[in-house]
Length: 353
Image (cartoon, rainbow, N blue to C red; front, side):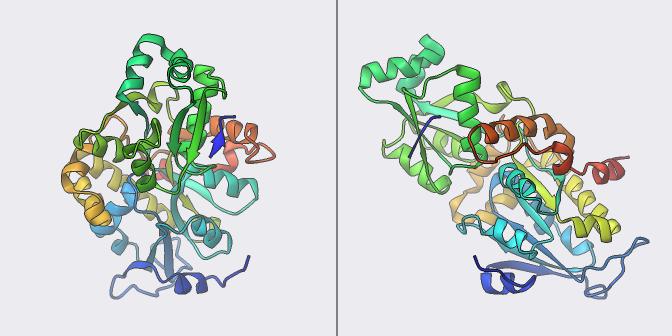
């Protein structure tokens, strides 16, 4: 809990050791080719890293709709679920060409000078603050002072349960409490847990009073008639709040520009499909997560106010700067990181013309 306030691997060796390759897609005659369209490609195998969560829905669509098959090189996809920060380690070691990941690890990598840029955003305004219904009554009467009232009534601090330090959720709840509400750390504590499952369990067992979390957890709790209700969502206080992004290694968009542009074009197509055919998108993420996410929950969650799927990376640039400032304030990075070193919007501009 916190108060509110290595070995190296070869480029391909890590993925072989990881043993979690989700699938390999190749177009028969093109697998292993050294050139694609006019600009060419030096990549025989495109290594893609991801976690199977809602902010990376474009990856699920690109996989299940066969968009990756259209690229040319063979595609190896590694599911890093329950592997902690190994996606960052693998990327830093040079094993990954394309990663679907959160904005906070991207900021940390750019702080260390690791090559790569965000070439597409996946998601914005995607987090929900939820609390037990008894606290919601206090909130409706007292606003931010409800946290102090809670302590007076219960003899303890209000407890938020959310993702680990350094996660988007952790940074966001810190920002909301301090910058938006002016809430003292004397009345709130933050419990950090390793994933949505443990957070949900903490809520349902009464260990936590509230959470800051993304879909589909808010929808799943609602459909279970769990005694938790919305307090707010990130779009109300941080328009353009960043979440999941598509992070592309420099070698990909510099040395294989046609391939890089094609990847971004597939991302845009996936975003359009999500927004135009939400049931198809829900089926994709439900199939990816299996029994952990029933289709009924996925269909409702993908239509949530907190499900905002985009591709244009400039839509989250201002929110990302706020995250950089917050991470520096919390001591998670030592120096500021310019957003110009994080984003490469030109590929999206080219495919959107």
